[in-house]
Image (cartoon, rainbow, N blue to C red; front, top):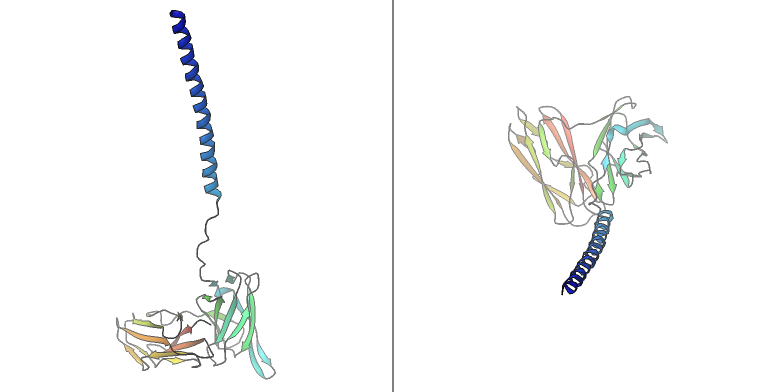
Length: 256
């Protein structure tokens, strides 16, 4: 009887040992599969985030020539490598002192560009990157009276808050957006009747009269895209007459 018990004990022990060994193997295999699965999750490519609007560094833009050619005054600008990020698309260049159509120049692979356009020393020129409809904020460059020095133009007076400050993108005919003009100065601000630079795009605005804002007061100018037009952009000017002469310029666009 004892011999049978001993053999039974041995049999149970062998069965238990075999079961434990097999279970350990399965656990190891499962752990390996789990590790491979986790590794696969880690290295799997993730969707790219939505693209951001391009950036334009106005400090990289310099004037390299202001002279005459064929009796036309020309302003020639060079932008250093890295001025446009990412380095692609075109730059729309607009002389804010003239009513000429904007110029368009291709951005080089290193983010630089060059452009020559009609203008005179003392003019202010606006630059804006366009990358398949995504646009940078406009940068205004003022050329001094000698035609040899340029400066990035800041909004003036600083206490006059305009939102959006320099760029309004409308989606197409029927779209409208209000521009908020808020007087944060300690004195009244007077703004002449708004005006369009060319008036050939599909844009209207209201009210059309002058604005007088007391300290802390805000006004609204609503711009609308209406109908069809050959040109897809323009510039809306706010000429400030008090407390000091200044000008704000807001680029208006509709998709091509």
